[in-house]
Length: 262
Image: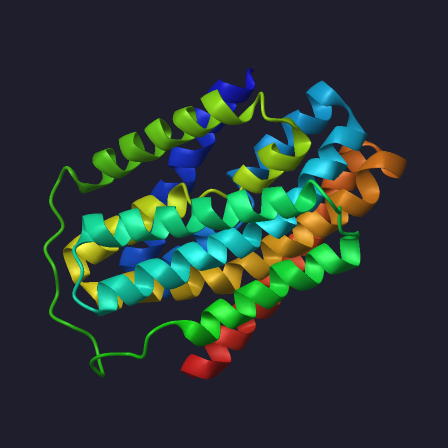
C-alpha cells in the first residue's frame, strides 16, 4: 500500500474517531485523539522505510521542533476566535502562524542543528507555554446543544483527505529537515477545530485546541524515541518503542485530565 493511499485512509478514520469521541465525551476528548501520532506516524514511517533510518531519525528530530509551529497555530487560532473572529479569519491566522514559525525554524536549522535534548525541550516547552497562553473561558458551563447535520461527518472526512493529499504532494520532496517540520502541520486538528468553532463557537474550538496540546506531549515522546532509536534499532523495534512511549504519556495525560474534572 502506497504512502498516499495509507494516509488518505488512516487520517479520515482518525477524524471520525475523534468526532465520535467529541460528541460522546466532549471537545477535549476529540483534541486528545487528534494529537496522537496516527497521521504523522505513517509519514515518519515511510520516510524511514523509503529513505533509510538515518533520514527518518532526522525527520523525527525536525518534527519535534515543528511542535513549536503547531503551538503557534493553536494560540493564534484560539485568540482570534475568542476575540470574535470568524472561522475563516481564525484559520488563516493560525495557518499563517504555523508557516511563519516553520520558515523561521528552517532558517535557523540551516546554520545550527540542535541535539535531541534541545529539540525535546523546545517542543515540549512550546506545548506547555501554548497551553498556558490559551484565552480564558468566556462563559462557565456548557452552551446550548447544537444540532449536527447529516453532512457533518462526511465533509469532515473529505476535508481531512484533501488536506492530507496536499501535504503529501508537497512534503515528500522537501528532505528530512523541512519535511519533518511540515509533518505536524495541523491536518486533523484543523478539521476538528473548524467544525467545532462553526457549530459550537469559540469555546468549543478552545476545548479542542486544549485537548490537542495535552495529547501532543505523547506525540513528542513518540518523535523523541524515533529520533533516538531508529538508526541503531531499525524500523520495527524503534516504532514499537515509540508507540509504547506515546501510549504511556497519553495514559498519564488522560488520568491527569480525569482527576481535574473529578
